[in-house]
Image 1 (tube, rainbow, N blue to C red):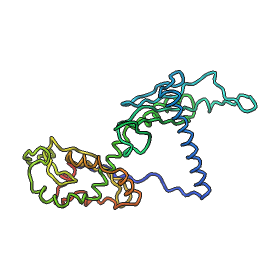
Image 2 (image 1 turned 180 degrees about the horizontal axis):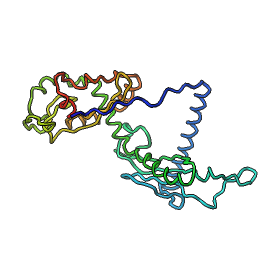
Image 3 (image 1 turned 120 degrees about the vertical axis):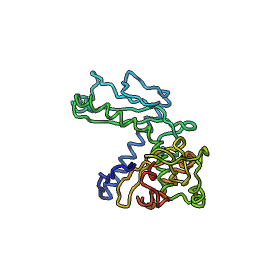
Amino acid sequence: MSGEKKLIRNPYPDVRVSEEERQHLIDLVSGFIEDHFHKYEEFIVVDKSQVDERRWEHVKSKDNLQVYTERFQKNSRRKSKSGDDDSSATEKDIAVMLSVGTLVGELDDLIFFRQTQDNVIDNFTSCVIDPGGKAMRLLFIPVAARAMLTTTDFAYCGQMKKLSRLLQQQLSTFKSDREALQQKKECVVCGKISSKKIRGFGPSTCKLCSGRVCSSCKIRKRVSFISQGNLLIQRKMAFCPPCISLATNSSAQDAARDQATGFKTYDGSSASPHSNESATELYD
């Protein structure tokens, strides 16, 4: 049974810009961020974190996150400085989207937004899309809403990045215990004697601590790596709950620092500390 997903090459080529263009882009982004901060402060202080449903129409929700689109105002017209009507078909078709609510997670993992209490992140996101016509607008708004709702996956993504980092470091803190754990047949969590694996079912080996973990206790995660050939590799692996907890509580800042400085790339042949492990055992 294979737990490895198709290798994917980065679809985005490097973009080279002049120093003037680079500074212009930085200034542009800084302006967007400052403007968004003002909108968020107004939403909190003036609107008391309440969405005006006369202006915003609900599109989709996920968990405690809601996405809205600005209602089309038939009588709303843009005026130029001269007072003339400056509206156009393109401007009327542009959709403004708003996402508000809370996410489960810690700021250390998400990096974005504002943490209001333990494990609660306040989200306020907006975007503008130009679908290119009224008919296309009806198709694009649900797609944009689904994209904005993927924010709920940010915390999980951060946790998986930390788990990937520990795997790539081969978790030196466990090295002295690996041989002893490999000899044991008991599950490192519940102490149950592990029976022989049959056709992929049964006990597995935790890919971090190398301890045996029974089918009831093991946790399977799909972990992503960047290979030496700059390819994305995704493998489904088994872990014990204590190691998952260790990865979850590790420092996201350290993981980000390692990624920024370029830690050792993933080598498929060293995915597990057991060189004699079968392919099935490697992933399950």
